[in-house]
Length: 324
Image 1 (cartoon, rainbow, N blue to C red):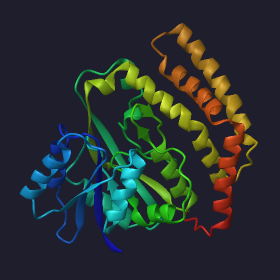
Image 2 (image 1 turned 180 degrees about the vertical axis):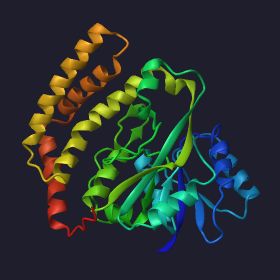
Image 3 (image 1 turned 45 degrees about the vertical axis):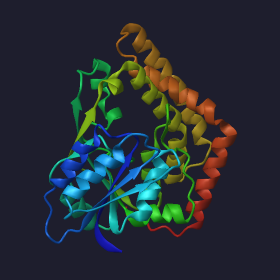
Image 4 (image 1 turned 180 degrees about the horizontal axis):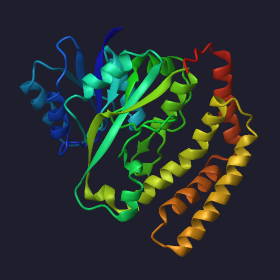
């Protein structure tokens, strides 16, 4: 596979925001020998996303670009479609509301191409807010893929993440299970990016975060409402038990440990509720902990054990190289 970067943008009715996203890609400063392309995936769009993008691509014929369609709703399906069309060795997932700094593509390529132990690298999100966000959102800004990730070792933001295409192909080709398929309509089942990161680690690679990879995350008013924020926290909470199952396999721990995590989730919720009773403004963590408990009930012990066995069977039967 030829070394280079394929930028995949998955769109659902992105007509009003796609122009800025693409313009920041057109303005990228890369070395002459770096090959890269833009792949825009329309996912059940009913607006003029494709028309707007096509007109912009026609104005920049020197940049490799294509528009493809994925009719099956869901971010995971749109990404897989884009990956299948990608011709280069590394993939950058650029959301339609991400504005990559001018050196993003070149820096991402340098980081991941110079160390074969790195399975994925991620950057630093900087918020551009349509309105001043509530204090609780500012406090928990990482929920919006904002801030540095340099201390992360278990996951990376999906926004702007750069992944080896060969890893995704291995996951797809071998039908590795993906239980967190991302946002579908009004359901914000989060954790899809974290799930992929867990597979990257299980496959023997490491994650790398760098503040040299900066991007602006444009956040409209509707995504800064408390109602939307609570939906996000609920999605993260529902995903937490599944991600714990992955962590057990990464650490070679027995399924029994999940019961300890469940007990810890109960204790954490009680602590968060006490803090909330003292200061009603600090409800974010309490709502998240409550959502984790709901997540355990949603998946159920029997299903979680089945998922654990599925992952364990794959990791024990595959010959995985541990670079770490």
